[in-house]
Image (cartoon, rainbow, N blue to C red; front, side, top):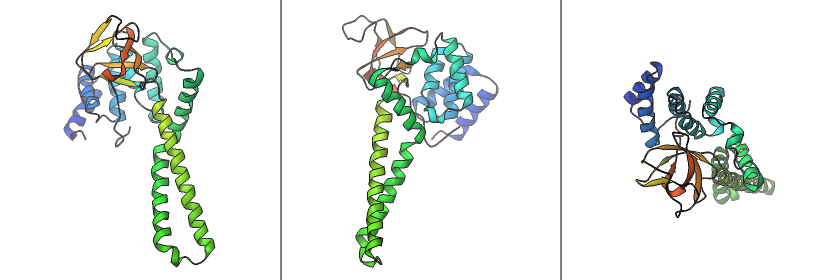
Length: 245
């Protein structure tokens, strides 16, 4: 949780269009995994205003689709345009199995499987306790059957939501990430044997193209250069779920 004065300073920097300060504070909040969606949006906007379109794209794409509003989508489109790309250019996994599963993951994300899983599991626990300790007090066998049916339904819904969470996690593409190791290299091919194109410092944000759960991922870094990085050298940017725009 960020201190109140930090948030006030960040908001004041946004209001006064002090974009370098917004970048410093926003990167600090993201590194601590304490950034709200509003902070991430303004960090991306700061990158865009200072001419770092690839970093802006990385930041905007780190926010789940169900948390993006019209201003988010407009800023992302503008960032892509300035970076010399388009949404179609980023769809590296648009075809085949991974592409299909990515589209499924995006649909699941809009349904919010986490809320469904928690709700269904909570209901299943309540029904299970009721069935174990109160089955003798139930008026008729029909009531007991209704409770059992509801319990089975709740458990089934929990399982389905759990599968949805798994699909959403493993097949999300284009996550933003930051370098997490001291010696992180961008290489022209996905192999440790290939020469290093560029070394990145810890904390450098990059745009990830593809599935971050694979050993090697293609990335675009600040100056627009691209290549391959070992996924172990990256940490996916996460947004605090306790805050929203």
